[in-house]
Image (cartoon, rainbow over all chains, first blue to last red; front, top):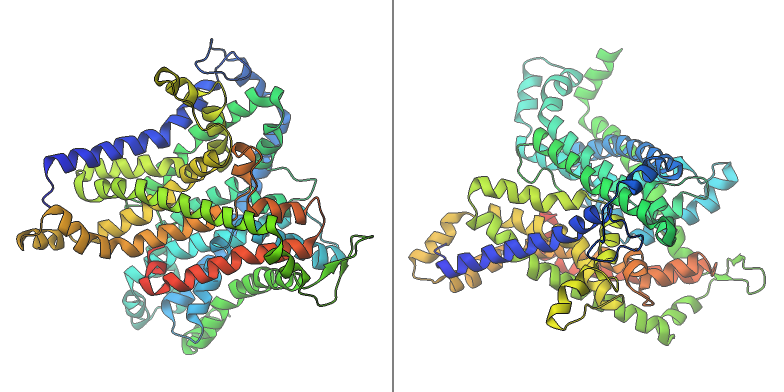
Length: 270
Length: 287
């Protein structure tokens, strides 16, 4: 498109402003984590490493981090299995209700988290508790998996549509059975899509607070629940800020991984 | 045995299909749809005033309450207005950014910009909301930056909630629009220019119609996510309440699940109508 120089400059200005809008609050948190002042008045009156030491020794934050990682790993594993199976079915077969299947998979992420949350919480109290299954890590994992399935499904489905079925047919024609074809042809083709989907699923689960609130019960505290519980306590503010700063820095890891596993510049689909 | 299994799979495609679909459908239909169905069903029940137990007899009182109660109606309208405002703000901010990324920036810069926009998406939701608490606080960055101009920031309240929700969901809008614009061939834009259209005309007649489904795809995210949010408003919203707070309050502290369920039906109905309306634009393929 033949844009005038003015139009280009205007678009570039928008880009810079947009990025500033995105990054300034994050940088403020990073700087604030070294602020001497407990209330984080701006500009900081001085800098200290004390809060970082305290956060490192904080048992609540450490336990919550471990719980979050466990829950996210469980939800990702479940989502990988379910999402991959569903995406193969939808990509490779024509059947009655195919549209319904894709809408059903989309539903948990399209509906607000609080709806999913109270629906699952209600189901756990009415059907699982009489069976002896209580609120805990298991219910958190299943709750997270319902909305993580869609990201694995979307990534794998897009890859399967792009590669088509002809390679698999060729493999079968050359005498490979279904298992061999999957192992040597299909799986290598979708491997990076699986990784991209798994990364997104892990991040979604790790970050989730609303569904977690309703499925965790009293004994399980994930990192988002810990942060939210400590937001209301002014004397914990410095430690919360350090945890926030750590999470901001840590968010570079998945992006870096996604760029490595995927040639697709967007690093996966939402 | 594996061989026998494999060859029977080969001979019966429907068996493969059933095996592939059985587990995902079992989990999603039984766990998710089942829970959702029970929730919607319980919207027709009531709670015993004295014991707080759920009484399983059919009544439409909860829905009547949701529709006629002035407080609820105000909060529902406010929530829809907030979700709409957030969606518009995100679209207005995201479109120029996505356009610059997809059509103006060099391929090298493009890759870096995508990473730059994507990285905050991975940062925790709570961390981002918390960051804005530090920004908007009385002695925070916003007031500090505006002070020399004799201005004051919005402080905590509904405007702050709209800002924070727009901030939170902005990458969800940028990415679909960027993907949509990237798919749009440059040759179409050149053809439009060759036929005498100026940039504005090309934008109106070529770019806008073709990118519209992508914008709608982003809007599905921003609208739905705003509609059910009750955390951000607790962090920066001051005393304002949104639909999510009402649902949470009734499901939790007030222990009135039937009323919470009837309130939860509101965002479900709004999202289903929204999805049905936008289905024809092809937005669902842009997710």
